[in-house]
Image (cartoon, rainbow, N blue to C red; front, side):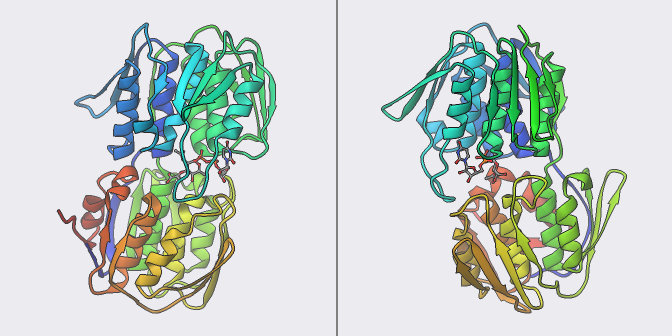
Length: 413
Ligand code: EPU
């Protein structure tokens, strides 16, 4: 339940990145022993990845100091069952590590979701380039590889998931793997840093060409997860909608360059600090144009929250979704709150209004849910977000963080 809030103030600590933590957890399959991951957010998706690793025979434990411990013994069950993959697509991140260590993998093929069909053909084609063979039967992908062999792989598109699977497979392959047109997201660099700490040799992560020299073995190590840039972006949008002055402790401004510039044009005052980002907003945001692109472009994950702010801006904004063509289901929910948004193919035309109108709405995915919170903070009356469990998949202690800033948000039973 979200009610309009007076200007927010205070400090919010940005948690570790969901989309890095999940892959680092999968990478723990690569080394026998006890891996320790710090700054892993306490979110539902981490719970699903923990259940998946446990189904594979690993032990996952949250320690008293809040670090996540992942223990891998000698035997690993090389299977990711449908019940878990169906709940979380990131489960496919175990494909590369399983092929690299066990030499086989049975992973349920994820279906479509709210963003559209979301195939994993590039993951499979790039692992095939390293010598893996796949068969699809009864909805399961069965993969085999005696020993992966390094190769040159040119990705058709800089897919985050395909790049990550390639990194985790190539790191134990025989010889050198070169990935061209690799994804450049900060989460890729975080995974490469973790693999290198484990004894891997990954060069160039964060650039379009990554070179991986395969090693014989990796060891379990400790690592701290990179801060979540999508959570930071969400709080920037929250301040834009509700107004106020907030410090995002731990946020990395260098991972949010373009967004900071765009939000600046919307009228937000933003300044990077030694360990975070300071943001202030007063008055109505201004209209802007935004198009999503792979990093360093504006992330597709930011767009629902940006569109919520656009719907409150002075003037007409244009938004283009280039990454997931079908990712507009939240638009209908914002429209229930009075937002004036026209969908034209993969473009949105958003006519800003001074106020939205609180309404019962539905969170169709994680970021859609966050966008409805942004909208609700600047809507008259109450906004009840159904299926708010989607928000818990990706945001740690969201309600507590918001109320600490003075927002009028509460969780209903
Ligand atoms: N694609 C293919 N074939 C593939 C792989 C991807 O056609 O084999 C297409 C996708 O359908 C999409 C585009 O390539 O159109 C980009 O997909 P990508 O592989 O880069 O995304 P992902 O790895 O599936 C991750 C994040 C998403 C985030 C995207 C883009 C995780 C767990 N998920 O997905 O995050 O939107 O990268 O940055 O890391 C979220 O956190 O809410 C979320 C959806």
